[in-house]
Image 1 (cartoon, rainbow, N blue to C red):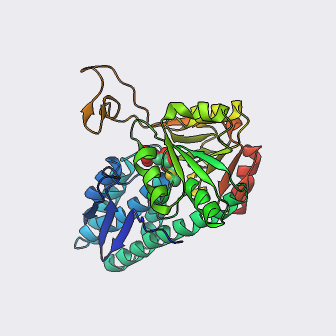
Image 2 (image 1 turned 135 degrees about the horizontal axis):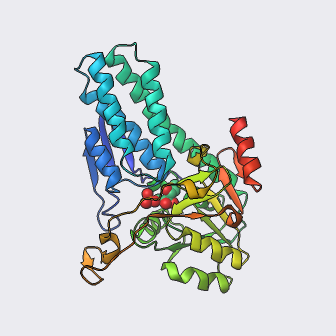
Length: 349
Ligand code: MRU
């Protein structure tokens, strides 16, 4: 069954993004023709999810290249550095953003001697390749992950690692989709995922749209349902994985992982290899984004906390590798010891 929720579309030089801040009550597609707009869309979480922001940044670079096409080669190259910097400075945690920008920048440098018009075409092809590969990768993650799912499983997920967080199909929800497509009669518990409510607004919407049975719960209900033996496994996505298998993902993931271990429930992380940061040894080194306090003090624009209250709003947390049963990638399922097995995977690349 093909999925119709395509968060990112590129049509004739126009970047189209589903405005994920408006879902599920409004379905609005915004159009962008300049790189500043694309960068702002990432920062403001119009588009979000690690692979999706990588793909958007790749198209942002194409938009930037088109904007500066009438300059001399020297000025064009200078401007492209600025474009990449602006896109890099949008969100700090998901490594896929930097992975995609680095890949586009390498293509730019490798073709520096060509005419600007040719460089732009090459960049556009590369962005399309990143997009198409992401879809293929997610399908492969889905297939590998499906082998871990038993008929009738009830799967808990946190945040949104679905089609909306990728080019299509999703990582954690890709596994869920694959198991559903295989007729395994699975169902899902979706954590609402405060403060930005990606679970309530996006995962619940996406699964309902797809006809996959889903029950929405608030974040603090997960332990209760695990203890009641209502959950068979947890599957989440990731924003950055370090070489020792520590996993940065949406705030609250760590608590879910600890609860899963306490209740002897497997905790799986589904992510493309581009989410592994081979330059970092452990999760303590991952930069954690701090977001606007308003996300905590307000819900849907309504103030729920006293005026002037001190707020902390880290967007992600790090789950230590000891809580991670396995990491599902497009190359296969990685089990502990992660230090050894992630490195093995790198050498196979
Ligand atoms: O802040 P967000 O919505 O971009 O956070 C998204 C997540 O934490 C996802 O779980 C992660 O990016 C994996 S998406 C396939």
